Picture 1 (cartoon, rainbow over the protein chains, first blue to last red):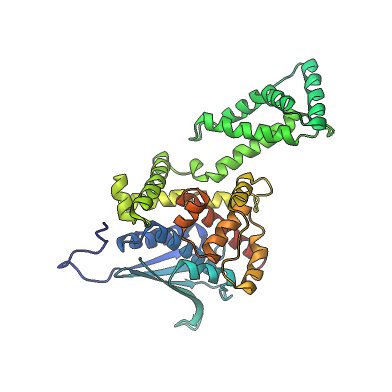
Picture 2: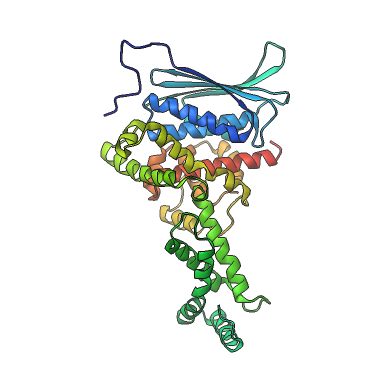
Amino acid sequence: MSDGGNPPAGRVTTVPEVHLALPATPEFVRLARVTATGLASRAGFSIDEVEDLRLAIDELCFTLIGTKGREGRLELRYRLDGSALEVHGSLDSPDTDVPHLSDWSDQILDALVDEHEVGRTSGADGNGVRGFRMLKRAG
Amino acid sequence: MPVDPERRAELRGQFEEFARARDPGVRDGLIEAHIGLAEYLARRFGNRGEPLDDLVQVASIGLVKAVDRFDPERAVEFSTYATHTIVGELKRHFRDKGWAVRAPRRMQELYLRIGKIVSTASQELGRSPTVAEIAKEAEVTEEEVLEALEAGQAYRFASLDSPGGGGGDDDEGEGMAAQLGQDEPGLADAERRATMDPLLATLPEREQMILRLRFYDDLTQSEIAERLGISQMHVSRLLSRSLAKLRNQADTAGG
């Protein structure tokens, strides 16, 4: 059986959290996926769950950056809490249009992850910050 | 490749006869007469990490299609027409296994090995195996397993360059559709389906079906694989490809 990916008791207990800042272009989405699956495998995700996670990260990242990419950066924060992986993504870009999650993407994400949202909030500098949040649990 | 004019005229006569009567014997003769062309083209695609025998098989499928579809009334030589069809078939083969031209050989092999491990382990465990379990079985690190999965996806950007939709030549998909029978509606969410279906309709049958099974009927990738008699990793590749195509379309449609 699986011995899980969690460190044995008595070791460092900081919740694994990883930050990644990438150019907001398609060729870097791979790194967003690899980081997610690397953490997911530590959390004991099954291969089906890992594959779903990959699709979800693709869908969410491309929702923010578009299929051709944008100026600016895509920032991702991954947080592993027990058997749950939470990912926050935000786009720091001079482009001003709001990301639009199609009904179709919404339905896809419903099937792929446990929680997801995409939206726009006000950043510190007054610019709109476009972002997403998703959560997927193992098992 | 027959060059001698007499032989050429003879073959032309056979094509006309086959176009009229569709006689299987004549068909076999025509295929046989041009098998050299298929082999020649298959060799041209050699040295890309695929066994030559496989390529000859693929090229032969292209040749059979060419013989079946060739219209002798048209003012084009069969060899020209067949070259086009066979090269198309070979390109499609590489496109479908797009990783073959991009991923390092070691990763291709690992990817294939993982595919087998996933099938066996899923049966033994009655659930989808974890990355750790796969890594242990394959005697590689978890990172290598994940890297191989990525390699399996490397075809993605290549496939976006090719014309979307896949056209009407997706015989495998049609066969699978027939094998599955009619696809019954899963969720009763008729309104939502009405929005999605026109989008889906632009994809090849097989990809549409897999998307429906995954996102309407909520089957897991392993369940879909079992139902369609293909590997889970093949399901995964098709899903990523379809979703990428749909995104691309939504984008060009100005979404």
